[in-house]
Length: 213
Image (cartoon, rainbow, N blue to C red; front, side, top):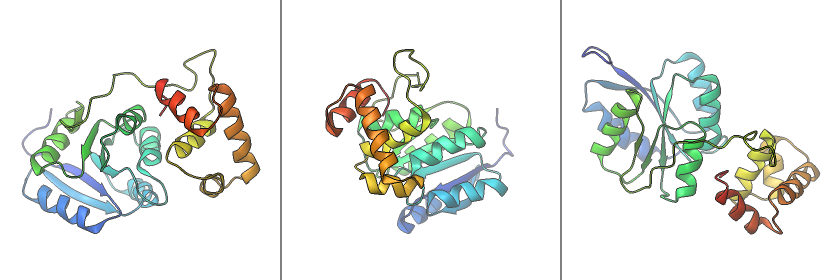
């Protein structure tokens, strides 16, 4: 439990300055929490976490460089002590589920009120989850690439699948992961086969039904 003298150290990450400024103004009104760092893209987040002690990170899902999903996965792996709250304009269950699967303890919509932001920070800091009242809380289980003997999806295939679901082209995915376009095409064909899909739309539909995205 947190005693009265403990300050919750917060990192804010969003590529829009107006969002950062608004969150900083909201948090500044509460003496039990403090913004200790802010970033405008995913790589900055990971760089800051190497040296800065952070308790709670509020991450925009759609940041440049590394998006919020990718950053959340990396934080879960390399900085498991940092609690993550996703920030998004989207209330689609697929977004909520994906962030939850990759370790986010909270999910807020960008137009949620200040009281929701503060409640979320305090709740996840204490070890509980907090989801905007306007989204459906995901089920308390995560998808594992090794969870089914009949469907084994590699980590790279999962990453490619996530970007396909976000509408990235083969060329854009290749640039993101420093792969050749041919390799991305191969991953896409493999995913179509493993998920018994004829095209990208069916691939995304089947993946969502299995809780993979």
